[in-house]
Length: 124
Image 1: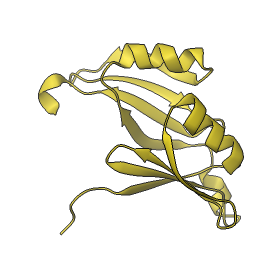
Image 2: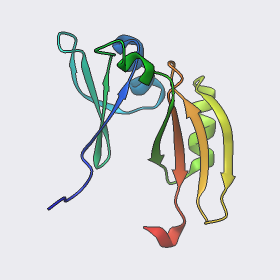
Image 3: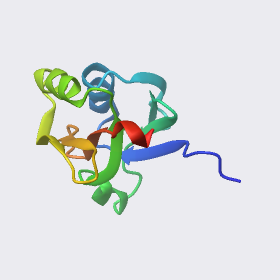
């Protein structure tokens, strides 16, 4: 039986650069970093965010796209302003959606796109 989503992996071009972005700008706690196996993980709440570099010519195509991954936040406006001040590039400022959530869209240094998401109070 599946109990929860445990690990999500995103392909990046440089683990060193990704480490600085996800740790220093987003504020995620690093769990594991192994240069030899080219793998880096961060604590993202109940899910571990995994980063790795392309392992083949085909996987290079996975760098710099829409991931569909959302980071939940309690105060999207404050988080948006804090990240923007740290130089995080946003494509969409916080906006309320018809279904009640508030989201913003940002990217990492490789162009991988993510959402900040403040869920409606009745959804949690």
